[in-house]
Length: 518
Image (cartoon, rainbow, N blue to C red; front, side, top):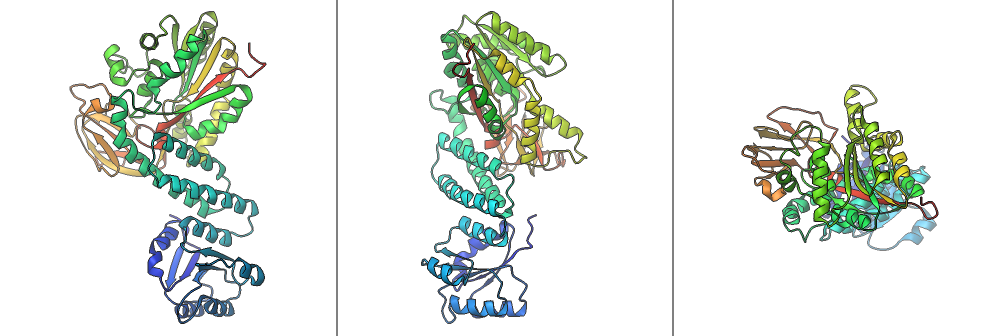
């Protein structure tokens, strides 16, 4: 729960019109007492002069005006901060008399109100206040965008802005700004889930009317590079999400000429479907029809994947190219990657190397879940992923391969979301695996406010079987508590569901810097 140690007295003769603002402040961690007149406010302060940390005071009130009320409150407690709420500009009065700490002009924007409160209650943190001021401007813009009618590119752009602020706000001392940002992200997450649920089946069933997705990478990125006579190495960092890529993007730009795009992940957001689509351009149902066993083994079969990759290249008009698929995970991972690098040098090749960096991070967390080293928040998750990436061979492989005759693509199949709330699900069987926010089964009973249930797998372009009839996916930051079992505790990172964290992923196209080509 939020700390409610900061107490605000709000004085306004029309306080009923600001009930939503009061709730907004309370949900952001403040305790708010309301008074409908100057007399009532003065009485409250007289009864307990130390009860309040800040007063929000309407300037135009009948009987006793805001200025008269201010005088009496200051007489009782001279150092009690006051924010004057007015329909006019009074900056000159503030500058001359310093009678109150700040003013806000009606109609009052909730975001500006929150920032004003925090800046006064958290005075003395200069750098933090400057960042808060800058965030307020960004918040106003992002709120306006979120309140409009958004298309898929708008959603991707808005989420990009939100995660850039995630990173920048890591060190801010203002709890109010952090809560404000968390609230905005939560509101946007809800709207994003509704948008995807309404549009996803149309995207995957109408091949000409969908956002850039994993199935498009072969045709839109790989085939054009191959047509230039270049090889292509695609490195898939399984599970990495947009904010984690943004943290390492400066390092990429120091070493490569970088361009790219954002992709919308397939549903459900799990590696075996997403990586297969990246490597072949096939939806899961197409891949299963072409290679019936492609999704059966726990570990992807490189031979099966190479056949799918050749089919995908042929469909994209680039059939006369060698293919290779390698996993960098496991005890033989480095040897597989070395073999892939050697193969790329011998002939024009389309190669895919899959690296499950996130599984390594979360696996370490699982082993340490009862210690202080376990991951507990988003910032720590980013830091752990950065450390894992820095200690991996990814950047070295990219430098070794990228040159005049080879382009490197860096991307992810999907992201992970920090799950904080349980959703009870009653189901018959989980066909996709443990620790996921989704399953395919015979039937299920769910709360549709927390979980999406799809009763026709063909609407998701998923393989159909006699025993698999429905697919459910948790939305926002819910995790699945199956069959009355509490299951996982809150604050765990999972994938498989519908959220911007899981679905919006970047794709970087890396070529040599000018003057450094080989």
